[in-house]
Length: 212
Image 1 (cartoon, rainbow, N blue to C red):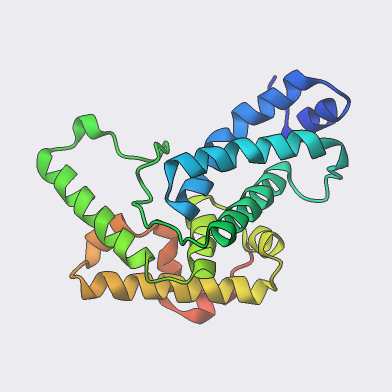
Image 2: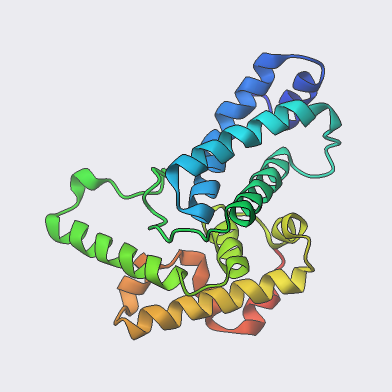
């Protein structure tokens, strides 16, 4: 039976390196995807991913389990991304968020040439729309819509009140929708371009009242 993160962390804390390797295998893809989505740079994202697990390995004995292990990893990765941008004084490159090999990608073998063209065009428009968001809004959208974190988890990661996170998500998704509409993306195409859960941004009240 597959061990939980908590069980693997307990074993790793006791000195079982194989358990930590299992944690790396379980979360490496997600951490790389997060770094890539925040920075838009493949080489830097790989470096951030590697450094995240190196720091996690060095600090595993200090992990108290007050948050999920995955949340702890996300925090390390996000801090490293922010440090990189401040150190290099460079902004993120806006890249299509569906190009990192995530399992949710469509099966290209069953796509027609027209479908592929439409998908690429939508990806480009979505990339341009994401570029209009602030760093805080974009990170919040990425964490919620692409990585499935709860509002509370994002608030803990960003060190902000829950209301701030919800407002950032609402504002970010509303801006994305307006930008896409200005570019002529409507109806079913909008559903393809924007994560499904972003439809909750139809009203501020609906978003703010969400419990997750």
